[in-house]
Length: 411
Image (cartoon, rainbow, N blue to C red; front, side, top):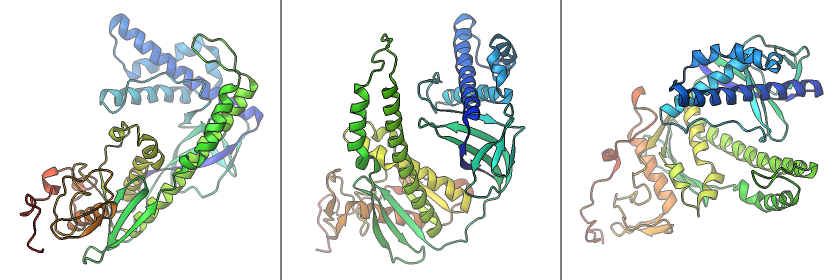
């Protein structure tokens, strides 16, 4: 059984929007209040975070702030659970220390674990008498576990339905694929069967969604900055209606770019999963690469991490194998014909000629072929080995006998 989430657009009326906004605000208030109390308790008497102790404090908080009684109590409890997840991620070193949630972002979400009902094209939730209209664009299959209602900065509401169901595995496919992601081209792909050396190579164009909208985005941001608004923390100027209106225009454009990027990556990842049994990619340190300020915007626009994450969970769903090769494996510098390693290759060199076998390489295509060969050599991984390959000694090629002199017996 696998957890799967359906996402649908909600169309609440004015009364329902007020209730949803109130629920989002109360959940944010409880989260921030518990975080503040945790910090205060630790400073005063060194009390550590404890989920159950702070959940017991919630009834007293509702007595102190009566407006919390107007929303679903289980949604408020879930806010404390979310804070607990944030603390656990911090203690494990996965993320930073939890931060307060800002009201000015105009977004948020709240969970409904029980006492909900989906009937026809409407969803009924606690504390709200009328059902909210939902656009169900596909059928929900599986056992429904919980609901989550979220709001975007563009004032759109969405319903996320978490279900538990069996994912239908795809039939085994005798094909291996090596993918080398890039900036100029989104990816270079090398594909072939795992029982022959007939390799097909291709490059996928980078759609550059942010770059195409950047001119319009800059114009809107300049217009936004001219409107009356708060410019410093000490400034008490109230944001004008024009500032709010233009901020929504900026948010809509950002949302459009994000949707375009997600649509492209979903379609591409699904195609790769459908057509290949084994997919090999590099385990890139994207966070570290974003430190290069000359390439950070282009890397973020491409969405490499999102693409690889999509490949990972779709491979788990449909019975495919995703191999992440160690980031120190020199896929671009290694000749895919004779395994010579060109240590002098730099990032600006897009093509190079192997001094050993005289093969002219396109940098990205050569890297994709090397990744393909890694996947071709390891088609039978045990379940414990699936997902990542980080043994650097396994993938660093052995020294070529002619690597020092650059001469070759083939010349």
